[in-house]
Image (tube, rainbow over all chains, first blue to last red; front, side, top):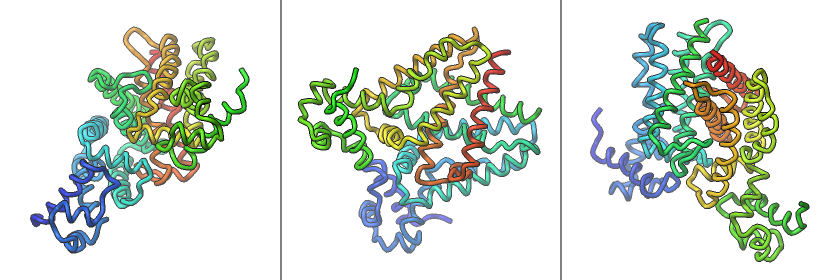
Length: 201
Length: 201
């Protein structure tokens, strides 16, 4: 469905406010004013603020859009490619967060206790979870469940990116250097190799 | 050296302000008022606000105090115990962050871009780094460096704790349940097992 011009303007207004003033400043009136639309349209098009934010998040949250990007490949993957696609998804997450200022702002704002847009986390959990469930069906053995192993790595990616945005050192490593990021990526892939070796035993 | 009563009061005032109003509210005047001391004492005892915060951080930041706690054991450890002590340090970090509200506040405030007390991160980097360097001397081979492998796990611990403080789900796992934390700890230890296996090859 093609979006109406004012729908697009409202979604872009959310991005503008986040970029210029931060997540905490988002509100119905401010969005309408920034978009140059009547606030009634936010209710008409999106059913309200939560609905608009959910549509915005689909564009800017990695795990919400990852489902659409990777679901076909995960569903049709064979055993030999499963390790490879797991690496690809986690590296895609790393690159997405590093490059997407808006996703960084969203995660930081959530960490600071912002539950105003709980809908975004609900949506992310729903989609991230579905992707993971399909991976589990392919990989899990009777005694081993891969879910927490992947979750641990995902959490690491988020934290390394967020905690080195303003201060370059983390645990003695200088993340203002590209070399450090390359080593981090190799380390991530190494853990995935070890993990799949464990699950194939 | 025994602390003077007013020194202790000033350090405790920092904790009080953080607990009641958050990190961003810390300032010389407010600390002096809360402690019921003259602000001149902050300069006399600690050389200023950064100095006071650094002393406070030594009490409340895991990695700043971890050095003192673990340095003797790491220095005298033999090869068979090295894996065990690595697990102990990371689990101690996890328990410390989960239980220490003030350390959580500090990390969240740093993530939100608070570089006002850069001295704390400098101190943490200095100490965390020293601990890691000693571990590296014991473990590293010609082609393999353990530093990034440990760093990746440390980042994961921070993020899982911080991102589940207000919202219990992370990647489809419910961290309001003790079982999830037990599985997380086992997963962390499993990765350390895999890691030491790799380094012993």
